[in-house]
Image 1 (cartoon, rainbow, N blue to C red):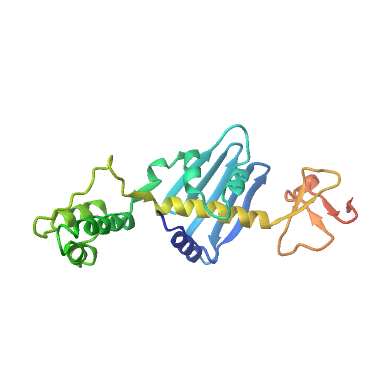
Image 2: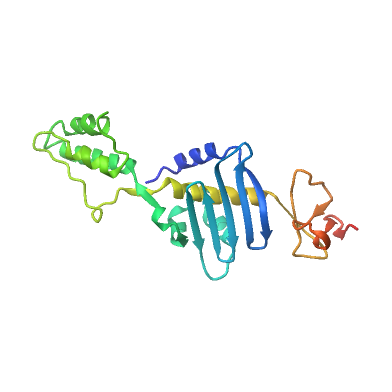
Length: 243
């Protein structure tokens, strides 16, 4: 099972100084950019349109879609249960499916320990041999399937032999770091976006709503468009447009 706490710690560390820039925000049509003002490392973008959400980051991209017509921000808000929900969300992935999973050293190590423990009674010293020759050996790496297979093929302990199961018997794949990063980016990005919404709507134009900003003033709201005649300013307490 994936260590979600580990993925959260890494995401938090890589994005601790990220700020949100709203490039487009018109109903379900959004383009939000999240980046460190001091550099572009681990920048990511969230782009939405009806039924779709696309997350693009350094070296990775995933598209999500669902029908009938729904705002994908709503889907991720209602299904995260306070954390990411990669199992359910992968059912909605339409782009990047080949990058959802990758080799898991953690799962393979757990399998090795289980195999050695089960063999210990029949082949005394199996646990120690697996530990010395594979698990903690400086001669072998379990980071990739190829190097793990070589380590197992090189293992010697009397008549005890290890055999890596075929993929149809047992999979050592788990959610890839890229996919978990994308899930984290979506949840965190939506929270940053939601935190900027004032919640007040223009009394004369209900489709105009206010977004908090560093210059947001109590008693004065401005709609997110703020373009020429489309821009409104109003007092939310008096529910009156300010001329």
